[in-house]
Amino acid sequence: MGAILKITFLEPAQVDDTLQFKYYALFPVTTEFTRGFTFKISRAFPGQCAIGSNAIDQAVKYVEAFTLDYLSDDFTITREVNVVTITCINGSDIFDSALSVGATFATFDEVDTTSDNMIHEIIFTPRQFTAPSGLARNYLATEDGFLIVTEDNKKIRL
Image (cartoon, rainbow, N blue to C red; front, side):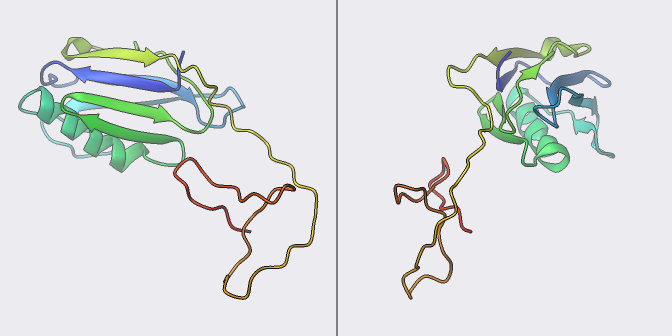
């Protein structure tokens, strides 16, 4: 199991082929949720993905459908040519990507990550901070005075 799933599209899907995987949407609660698509000539409803004209177009259409239906606080999705990378960012692993029917048009690689994908609890001791007059809001600071920043270098505000 891993928090990253790489899907390599080899050719366009056929009508009614499916691509699915499971994850724990309410992590750490282990209630399984399935995310996936049934491929159709054109997308008419959520849970459907349009069939592309080639492997790259199929990857593009998959990313578009995934973004519309499932992009949330649980996932990030990127595409590089015909390879789509889905990362679960809620702390859960992605698993059972073999829940796919007729998926000979794509290969799956569940990437084992070396760092854990766990959401950690941060506990702060209440403390008074004075904010410089130029700051509109106080920034969350640890006891040693450091600002807390996210992985994309955004400051967490109180």
